[in-house]
Image (cartoon, rainbow, N blue to C red; front, side, top):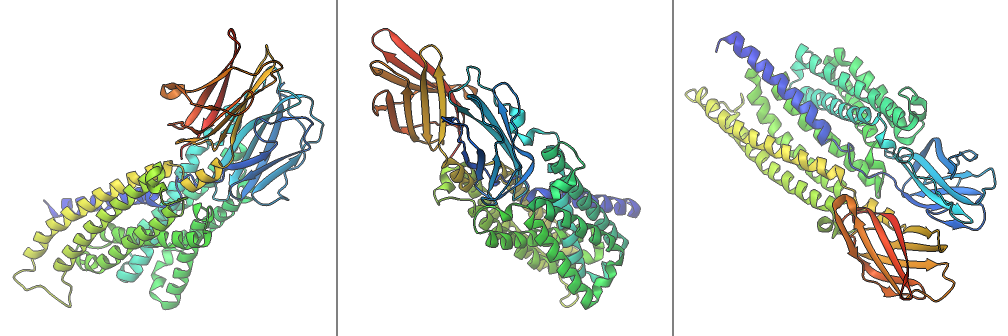
Length: 559
């Protein structure tokens, strides 16, 4: 291969590796997709309540602190007319939203639609119904668009922004740190400046996209950043944007990092940026938030160090300096991967409600799989480090003159094989990370499942009402109580309960029950094998010829 062609090929490979690392780090970074956000724990009125008198307030309590948005609580009558409400308040705590009802409600059914932003930045929303006096003949439908903010078209921009902001931030921090520490003579090089400028631009644009996407999701416009930065996470996003702009503008003066004072300032700025990134994500939610915040900052720092070293070797370093740098970086890389595994384990275990969740829940199984894959990657990284240590002889320990040309060529193939294995392992870790992020954390599930699911159905001909209560509304066995009210004559001779999940072609499954009083049955082992919205059918037989059938839909979540 001609020298010019070889040089162009090397440059192409460097930029391909750099771009790949930039894209992958956004997936590896914590806080991207894990669904550890707040959930509605209880409400007053409760879902499906039938009240004797008009309520004066609507109170929503969540599993974690939330921030209100415009029209955080809306109330709609059975006729589809909005009901006048007071101002949203949080006088009962930062995990509670409350609003006064300015008018006395007429008898009938109503829908409460609510929206908020979790402390960890996730927009959340939902809807439920209740009745005053008696349910309306035609109860209002709970529209999907009123209860699912994530379906708005700003969600894709928010997700893309998270990827760019995390990836760019870690590349800027890690590359600057590793170049300053291992190859300070490259600080002022054009190649270093180009890499950092590109990463800084991606980070800035990504953070702007986060703010715009969040605004679109919660307000329906891309430009209402005031509301976004008024939330807990939004304030940290705004500060992140300022710091990233400052870092990007300072890139032309990167050569100043050779001076001790400038390095101290640079380290402080890097740690501050990592802290701001962590404060705007999942680290502030759940339990043990102080430990989680420290663990997340350490996790981000280790990821930045590892990624920065790879970019130094693949893109920034000259060919004649790559082997000495690889030898010096190998120990740092191994330590970074170990720290990544340890801190990632802490972050993962923090979301478990009990040890058995590791094997009993989807989240736990993916966590075990990811930890096992990380162990394999650590083993492969150790082999790579051993290869580099044997081959990368520096100026203080030169190879014999007759081996200077042959030894690197032999070990290069071996190093390439181990690196490919390491990359393959990382790809599997990424796949496990994506799957883990899509699973509901057991701790969040345990918090929401403590609230029972109560559903009510009416029979218009006989004026009978059936109520089903699940405690909790989860898969794997739960307590079910069925009560039929409005019976004026003899009680029901027999009550049969079945459940069907049409979306999964499951059922009807008969649920064995025991009598629990007049017109009531119950069981402590109602088994819903799959999460989803189940249709529960109650057939009550009165005498030899009369029977009443109720159908009720109720959501069941996975354990």
